[in-house]
Length: 491
Image (cartoon, rainbow, N blue to C red; front, side, top):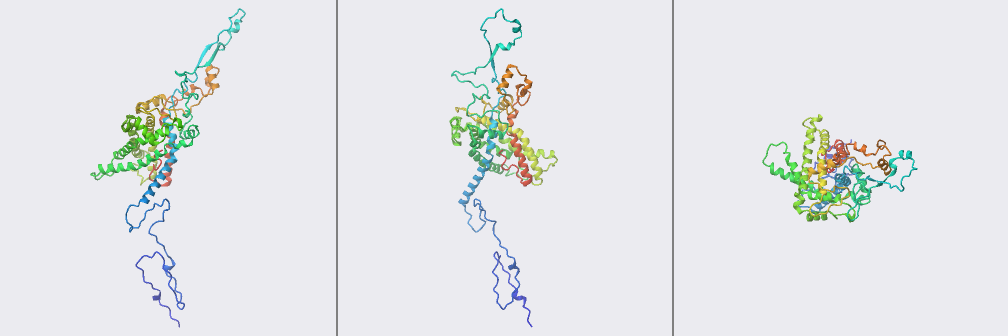
């Protein structure tokens, strides 16, 4: 009678340490019956002390606390290079749209653009022979009076050296070769295509000022939080019991950062606005632009404290964060979301309120940005006028209010401008065709309010901003991101 094996032979003493690798199965003798596999042998787990290794740029830090906590210079350099590449790539993706928007903002389109282009003068035809008695009085009575008048195009006005004076920005014959024809672009994308197709610019011109924009964005994203934390530590160190920090501190940090980086923004605007043609180019790069501006336009004091640069900088960098903070809190209760809407409790409702607030903020910030760009293009001191790739106002503005007034009162907004053909213009001038049958007649254009006001010039790039706001709303709604602006705030 065979005896039943005891369970004591299957007992294993528990280990006091973690087991990350399953132990090898114990050796069994041939005479010993095969025992049932243990639970530890059936299911084995391989534990890891950290996540999978990050092969992208090899930037994942080590979590081994036994290693010395010294500065890892190679890791720091790799991190800086990776961050610079990512920032440069993201800036390069949106740079064509930024170039198109800026060129639309600085483009000058006067209200009387077609004026002086269709002037004619009349000369009476000399009579070669005197009237005779045999002249038929009936034929002379019914003759067309305009048949004896010959109309010639008016001679072009010339200067003292004999060169033709440019009297209209729509005249192609007197337009400089480095200026893109005016009136053919109605939006940012149209300007992008026009710059790429223009002979004096090309595709590479869509990335003018890329390095300066990248440096400006990197410095702004690092200096502004530093200034904000410094101001909080100074002004709120002795204040206790505050649920929310004061509104003035983040606005002040943006103003200070924008003021410190205003020379870079000025250089970026000049590089984008100037012509890409070699013989008409003023600056060869950002360092050359900064050197010439400092040497010819008053130095450090003028580049920071000139009223035409200081006031727009404060307004532009102050109104943006102020409206960004205030508008969602003002719009959310009026949409029925309640007075206590927050991004952590109601992310979708907060995203909708923030996008609507950003759209409403554009009605105030876009005119200030347009005026700032136009004042940045103007040269000062002993510097020569910048040869821009689009039409700019020949007479400089005197300040923010003067620029706003002249843009509204002397410019037109009905883009693209429809040009009449020579045959239609000649028929209209001779009176052979009724103006009501001419769809391109100026009388019909004068009835359009956009032709008589320059308000549309203050909101160039509005549709692009609206499109970006819709994209941000969709990303926030379906992506679950709480940060609405992300990398789209610069657009």
